[in-house]
Length: 108
Image (cartoon, rainbow, N blue to C red):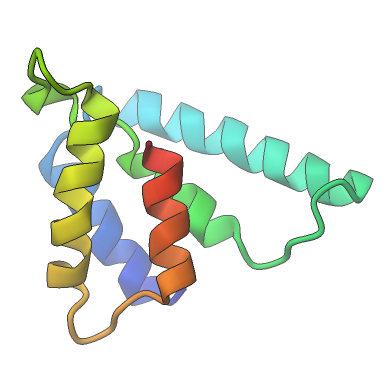
């Protein structure tokens, strides 16, 4: 994932106040990256280059909180928002299908 794509994804989070605020999302990002790094170090997860997907997922995971309805939970709302918003924002520099799927799966 390119830096410009990361910035565009973070902009989505910023515009929605990260769902529950920047501090919470950055704490989730720190913890998720710590788990990711430790699993790689132990050889349990042998994936390199997924850090940007983890970071984006952490920053976007709660963006559905302010729009949560009684019928849909915030993670489903976030998934629905991102399913349309990410391709629209990154139309000239799209994520790979694998990157987009990973982010959406993590948000759910």
